[in-house]
Amino acid sequence: MFGELVVVDDVPAEFAERVIEAYHARPNDAFSIALSGGGTARRCYERLADDAGTQIDWWKVDVYWGDERCVPLDHEESNYRLGREALLERVGAVNANYPMRCEEGPDPYQLRLGELGKLDVVHLGLGADGHTASLFPGSPGLDADPGRLVVMNEDPSDRNPHPRMTLTMAGISRARLALVTVSGEGKREALARAAADDPDVPAALVRADRVVWLADADAAGDLA
Ligand code: 6PG
Image (cartoon, rainbow, N blue to C red; front, top):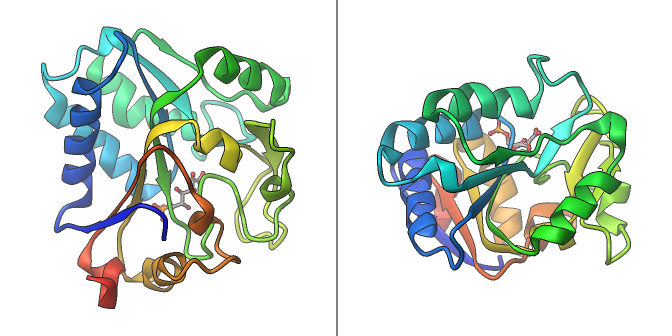
């Protein structure tokens, strides 16, 4: 795999620590983070909200999303709602947050990220099928034009519901730090395939200034 694999007992705790570390290492006054979806992400954001305390001035933080399901923002499957519940409502006001709005199409988000330049942190999960963000195996989003940072996408296997908006690999590569969190034995095969640079595993294609994979022992298996 590209980047470093760190096997830890407590993925959410390590995630929180790494985000706090990245915040203090940020080159600009503002700090930007793109959130993920999924159960691991929810636990990571709840822990970050608990641990950040006064270590992060949330008034300096701009929150983006790495992908979104095309459902209403208050839908139980919305990644915006997940980030709102697990992080934003717990830390209070942030400087700005930028939900992905499928109804607008990807271009406004593309322009916003184009203006931003680099994202300090992009948080990613890993699906058992090897997807990350909403870049599913065999999905057209994997073949986006190199200049596209954000696209609409779908899972051709129908394993993952709803049309999506997602960062492309080019969008992800704008991260100063890409943090990939992997938890549980159900991800063991996908992580092993990513570690072996299996070209059919989208997560194996993740590139950024720095890529750190945080996995627990159940997910790491023999990689530990
Ligand atoms: C999504 C996520 C997705 C997620 C992985 C892992 O919108 O579904 O962005 O990429 O991170 O599927 O999810 P779990 O942590 O729930 O296994």
